[in-house]
Length: 297
Ligand SMILES: C[S@@+](CC[C@H](N)C(=O)[O-])C[C@H]1O[C@@H](n2cnc3c(N)ncnc32)[C@H](O)[C@@H]1O
Image 1 (cartoon, rainbow, N blue to C red):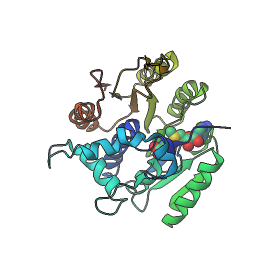
Image 2: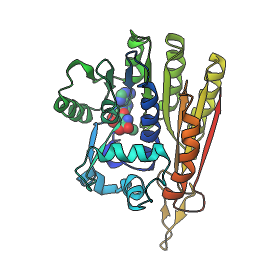
Image 3: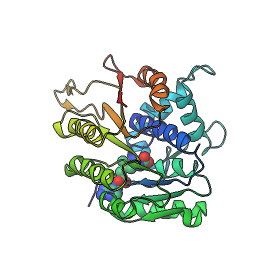
């Protein structure tokens, strides 16, 4: 079974990028009256404690969300989408505390209108159980469904959604090498079922070819389908292995990641154009920190 548990990583720099983009997309989609269905193919546990055992073991939020908070930017100095992200996370906490970090299911749920629906896939038995318990607390009734199923496969039966408006977030752990190919295959299949949906795929930027294949293949898919796309990446440090004084190899941890969006809101590029350089500056750990933003209409 899987060893990946998102609780170790909650609030890290990859979550900052992913959740900021997710909120920006949701805000835009919520402007239109028609009901929206949001699919989260890899949902995780939904809510995390930043002071809990898991988070403290790796402390990754310290280099992500908590680092942004600690930077104490001046009022109005942050790009609106970063501020919106910080405000939304703050809404899960009592004033001034940063103990709770919402995962994608809770971020999305907090932005739904009454007529919208959220379908959450989570395969890990423990995380699926925690997610179900967390979702039950919301008393959201039929609006939010937790499915203990493979998200890559499970999505198929829901596309196209009844009102023909949907956002699909796909955030695999890439713990299994086949996730790289499966996420691309899932988007390819989904575009044939429902070409006008918005698809947002998170991917790690690490020195292995499969990781770099994800945005490359998604670009080809979008271009072939004649769909607009946007690709945003954030690098916080070098990906090079280093050695300590004892000559042991030190792995740098995740240095960078990206979000690839097919059929993005037309406002997203400008919003991220302001935000990404700020994130690279605030979260950057060495001179390799940078961001990229590319798109095609
Ligand atoms: C990166 S985490 C998700 C984090 C979440 N999207 C967030 O932003 O808060 C990936 C999750 O996918 C789950 N998972 C792995 N393979 C899966 C599959 N094939 N279908 C559904 N869930 C899967 C893992 O157990 C893990 O909880």
